[in-house]
Length: 113
Length: 111
Image 1: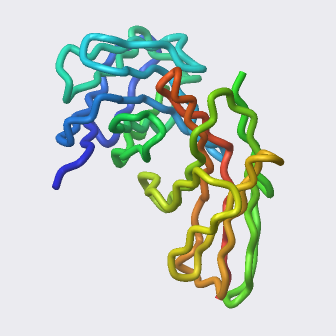
Image 2 (image 1 turned 45 degrees about the vertical axis):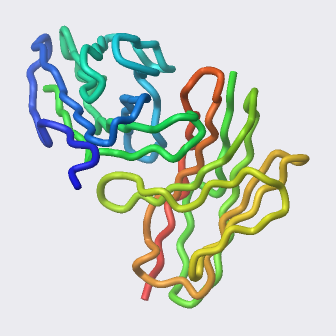
């Protein structure tokens, strides 16, 4: 079972470059989430989606955009990367109702130089 | 604004010790509280608590919820080095469809 798959696993960018992180889930989940995790901290929500074609801002959305054109995919974009966006990014998905456990991908380690 | 606070932020114990991790919360539309364990990579689900006073148990791990005082505890007895991890507490806001996570407790178990 694949579950939640994130690509790429690692990436190094230069300041100002753009990139897209891909998250795919095969559990037919309605909800999908993008988090970032910085050293010694928990998970901070960047953006999330409650269904195909819908997205909403989390607590740290600035500098990121998302799209959910297909139910199984949730893309996170960085238009102009900044060193402050160096972090580990986790994607998660969850079924209805939204208080159910989330299933996480293995993370993408992103470094911005 | 929803808020989840975990304590302590870090803890170092020796194998065989018992530990108690704390999670307090302020969330609108509360329905459940969840505990996750995070080792090297992805957080994995441990427990979901919805009712006060009912203990959830899995091997040496157990957890309980107090909805009146708005907190939960996670107990680990007879700790092993494999219990070393970050333990995360999360509370969903079901109206918003999202969860708020605490900063986690980093547990280190020394042999």
